[in-house]
Length: 104
Image: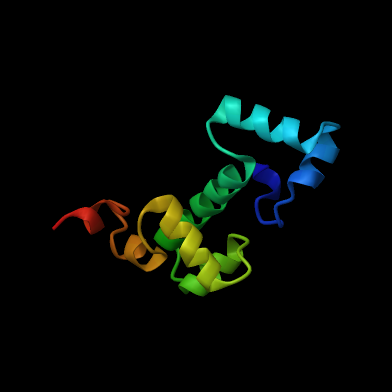
């Protein structure tokens, strides 16, 4: 999955490549990782985005695109859901990530 994190996620395609049923793959993946394959895929993309936000001056939209998201709004939504803050907030707090956003 890491090698294909920028591609559109497809449980069916993944199951076919592994010669298993999609439902079986979903159950087994979740049993061993504690998350669905789609959530894992989102985490991989967000990890790449976090690195780009911290190490480059690319715009948030460019970072989202480089991480494989099709739109900046979808990128922001998934990033916030996964990381607890927006990509812009993460960039402002490079050292602590999203931790400072929760502080009063």
